[in-house]
Image (cartoon, rainbow, N blue to C red; front, side, top):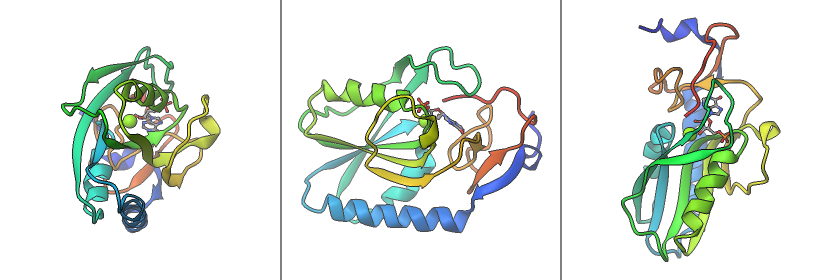
Length: 189
Ligand code: IMP
Ligand code: MG
């Protein structure tokens, strides 16, 4: 059993009110940008994206549908993403001709999103945009255009608000920084 989350917490990076305010802003911006689009489809990347999706969609004032996909990184040892990605669970929607907005928790190297974008592109959707709650831009290994970014964050391992520590603590309403040494092998999904 894990210890109480406080043990792993160095500091709160983004508290609940700030998170929620920014997500409301993103929701308004996306609603404006897609005001003339019919049938927007939000694609949530499991598992980290679920809290963000749930809060973001409550701020959308345009009709939309949701779907889910799960991917895994090979050799996902600790905090490093190997660059090789595999679809573990695919969409249930036919996305040909659809306008897609990918909803992610965090973009780090960018490898995962690059893979997902390519995998979706070949199915010929009308458009693909990317919305991520968090971005560690200084860690980017590939050039990827991100349309909506909630917060630029420093190169620290974070957890809470969808992001896990060994599959725990996804429920925390804030994003926290993991205390150095408190958790040797943080997962990478
Ligand atoms: P990328 O392929 O390097 O961009 O990695 C993206 C994935 O790594 C994200 O979807 C997260 O699941 C995971 N990840 C990267 N940084 C963190 C972090 O600080 N905390 C938790 N998960 C992370
Ligand atoms: Mg993720």
